Image (cartoon, rainbow, N blue to C red; front, side, top):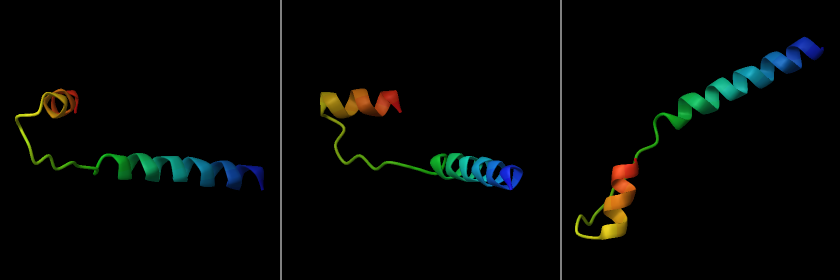
Length: 42
C-alpha cells in the first residue's frame, strides 16, 4: 500500500513538471521598462 502511494506521488510530480514546461506568455507592449525586464527574465 505504501509503495503504491509513493509511486502515485512520484507520477503526479512528474506530470506537473511536464505541464510546467508548456506554459507560455504573450506580451503586447515592448516599450514598457517593467515588461522588458520581465521578458528578459523569462
